[in-house]
Amino acid sequence: MSNFKVTYKDNLSTEILHLDSGSKIITDAPKDNQGLGRTFSPTDLVASSLSSCMITIIAIAAKTHNIDIRYMESSVSKKMSITSPRRIDEIDIVIDIEGQFDSKAKKIIERSAKNCPVHHSLNSDIQINLKINYL
Image 1 (cartoon, rainbow, N blue to C red):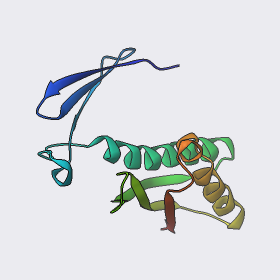
Image 2: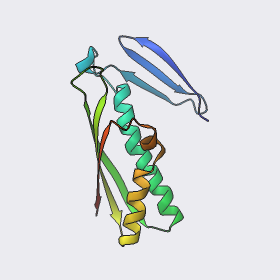
Image 3: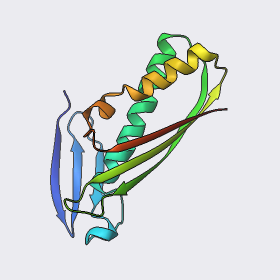
């Protein structure tokens, strides 16, 4: 279990402290919701956490199944709803993976991405569009 401390820092900003490591993340309300957009918004963290989780689970599966991944990164975008209540409507993720992949390895990678814990924790109303580019 991980534990965190979240402190309101004023001007619609928070500081999140990871108690085990001392690492900090600062959030800011986005420009389209009364904020200054100086850093990640909480919903930005949700979308980027999904991609980070997918990449981590892919890496674990690759290690387990001896799949050689030389490079992996993703591009992430999120779309907010235009109706009330304000929420994430859609997350687009493109993962670029470099290595040697046969059809079995690709199946393992794709299945791993779609079965990460963050993906299973999100509301099923959120449309998640995943594309994996094998380089």
